[in-house]
Length: 428
Image (cartoon, rainbow, N blue to C red):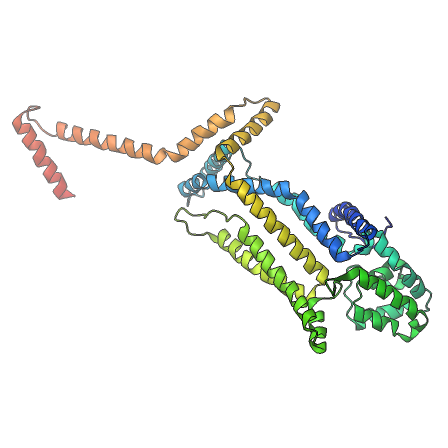
């Protein structure tokens, strides 16, 4: 695979991009071998494979989410128990009792963090690979070699390209140093050109001698970037404008479907996700749940809005990813409905016990202590009520017993006890 300098330079992300770049390059080579070298198809297959690879992580997140819904009532009791108590001792006890619940179910409070830490770099890297296709697919880079060499042979080409990029609002995803314009920089500029911009480039008087090379390269890239009759380097808004002016209604509908499908597929994807349990015991949603609900509504709308100005290639990636997640979520939801929570808890506890065994700790200590602590969390109010009831009975008996001089068990004694009881009720 040929290497371009115009790759992602983000810390950590760039290393993930290298791995994903190999995958993207392999997909494109296969498509080229079977006679359909198409970036749009490569993006779709690329998205499918990445989502399949991430499926085990998604399943793990779903299991943690379901376990959280089971633990939620107990966690709410702890929160209610220490509500309004800000002293250090109460906060420590609250933390201990919360950890006891997590230990009981054999999960870690940070159980959902690790999958997120794995997925986030991959998601960012996906965008970077799509933005820098020539940097990761050698075949695509080679397609521009003739045009790049021809441009380099024109005197003052750096200034010409700088002016062209500025006047035509060419969107670049790499930093270009026009004082030291390299072949890699020129490739980056040519790769993001729209069909109309290719025509303008070849019409520049200084490039009249190389117009044939530029036009030939434009045709090659058009074949590579055409997907269902639309050039994926263009933004839907650009296609909509040109289709409206030329009254190409089929093209107009196709361009409009990109942002609409981006919104709809992501909206469906969010709807299929399991809903987080309510944060309060009265089933009213807390601030976090409301924020999540708002985000699940707003994000698909924002995707549609951004799709209008982003390249259609990004829209294809969003739509393909959302469709795959929908299919995955339907399958995962069915599987999660069959999960036996008791068995899942036992498996989690076995994993915890193995870790404790390696650390030289008694395997059963966590589970037994957790059950004891959780029982103490759930039962203190009932125990206190029973203790208070017994104390009231005892105090009442002593009161009536010690406040009379009548012989115990006599008719006068019983009558006096009734009288004292009536007097006590009146005082209340």
